[in-house]
Amino acid sequence: MTDKFPDLIDPLLFAERRSALSGALPIAVFERLSDSVIDPDGNVDVEIEFGKQGKRIVISGHIKGTLQLECQSCLQAMAWPLDSDFKLAVVSSLQEDKQFEDYEPLLMDGETISLNALIEDEILLALPDYPRHQYDCIERNRSEDSAYNATDSQIKAENPFSVLAKLKKTGD
Ligand SMILES: [Zn+2]
Image (cartoon, rainbow, N blue to C red; front, side, top):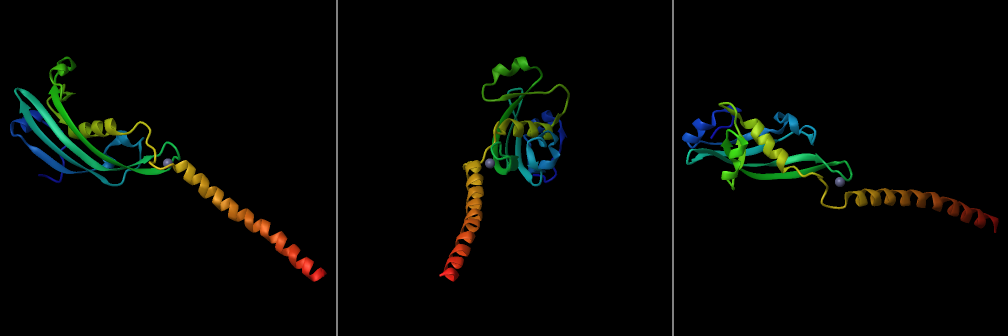
């Protein structure tokens, strides 16, 4: 357990110790998310476990949080709940990936991996292609507009009549 999440780690060391990490990461550290996230305030809660299957290093984890995305219908902010599990098997070449059906291959070409990049990849994979409000936000915006216009034009419409009525009364 640690609150300060390490970024660059040696997965072999973590796997041999069967280490587990958990903590909160600020959404603002994920630069590649900045195109999708309107408001980078807040954190994602991350849990990661390292282990081995035979000689293979495996990493499983869970990411949870709320991201502020742009609704593709009304272009307003919408809170999107992120709740994603992942299972990765560390490979040194992508040709190995067929051996592990349950696990996504994680290509490692050096001795360390970046946990921030790994978590960011998983968040990017989980993001919806077309984030949209679950209600009909365009229809709601439009009816709010027309309700406003109706009251507005009703006030305008009522005035000439009441003036006319007053004129009629004085005329009689
Ligand atoms: Zn919307």
